[in-house]
Image (cartoon, rainbow, N blue to C red; front, top):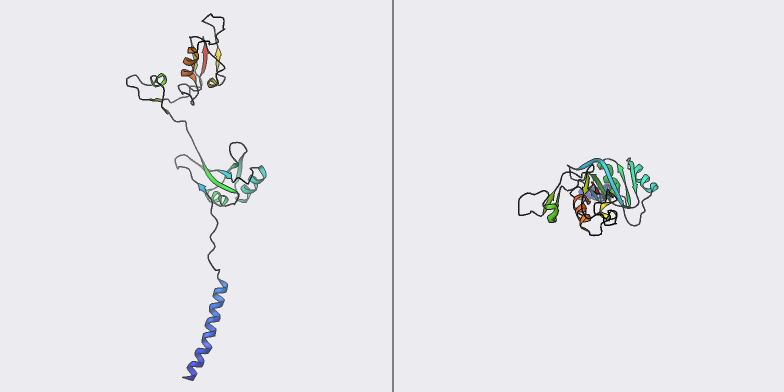
Length: 216
C-alpha cells in the first residue's frame, strides 16, 4: 500500500496545480457587453440606415459630440438638433446604431420613419362633417385626401378677418361687397367662420387646410 500512497500523494498536488492554472487563466465571469435603448420603426414605414440619436440630460447636443459619436460608429452625420430635441440624426447600419446606443451619454437611438397626415378627422363639427357625407345621420368624422394647396376659396359674406391666426397669412381681401365702410374687414364674424370652415389648417378643421381664402 505504501507505493500506491506515495503515487497518490505526488499526483494530487499536480492536479491541483493544473486546476489552479486553468482558473487563473479564465475570467471570473463572462463579460456582458453594455446595451442601450434601440428603438426600431415599423417595417413598412422604416427608413433604412437612418437613425435619430437622443442624448441624456447631462449632455448637450453639439457638432463636436455628434461628430465624435458618428465617426466612432463609422456612420455619417446628417443633422444636429438644438431645438426640437437634444440630439442628432445620422446614417448608419442597425448594428452600428446598436453599439452607439450603448454609449453612456445616449438616452436612446430611434430608427427614422415615414409619417403621413391622417386622412380621417374624428370629432368633426357638423359643418365639415356634412361636406363629405350626403346622407344623415352624420358620422362625426371628416375624410379628406388632399391639402388643396393650389386651391383659392372666394367667400361672399360679411367680410373676413384676415389677421386670424388659423389662416396663417393665407387670407386676403379681394373686394368689399358689404359697403359698411370696413373695406372688407369682418365686423360680424360670419364671413370669417365660413372662410375658416373652408380653409383653416388641420389643427382646426382640415377641409382644404392649405388653400387660400379671399373675401369677394
